Length: 164
Image (cartoon, rainbow, N blue to C red; front, top):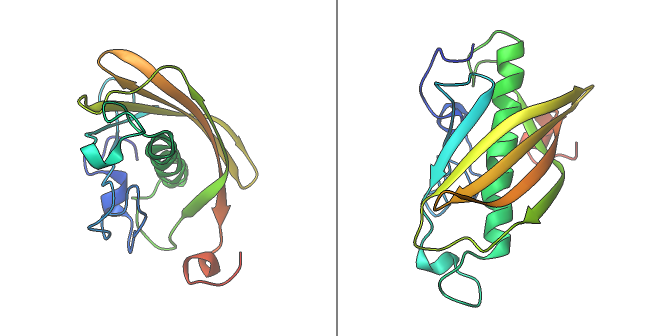
């Protein structure tokens, strides 16, 4: 169902309180991903850092924030892709949720606080309950970080506080 709805994946997920992308978390980063108009196999997002997101030097983005910023489009893309493979709209019952099983981030160069971050995510592997998504963060027309997010599909009990 790629391209059927221009709404952000994260806005279509019910009760999404994630710090990075949750529409229901007013204190979060509010990262929003959509399928690319130019390439329906790619999800894109833009995010604007704030001064509070800086590292030691106030001019560059904190590495932990970068990890969160690349993780959320990775998980959001895994979820959106799973709904698409089931030919369903995001957020329809039964809900589909993924969690981060692992993430590896390669920091290529400092990301300036004063620049909008562009994110591009693409599913590169699907096996059993796992989906692997590669994500790139760019700013000022240069790649700043690359990540591989291994997402695991979690049962509904995970969403309600029980162990998965």
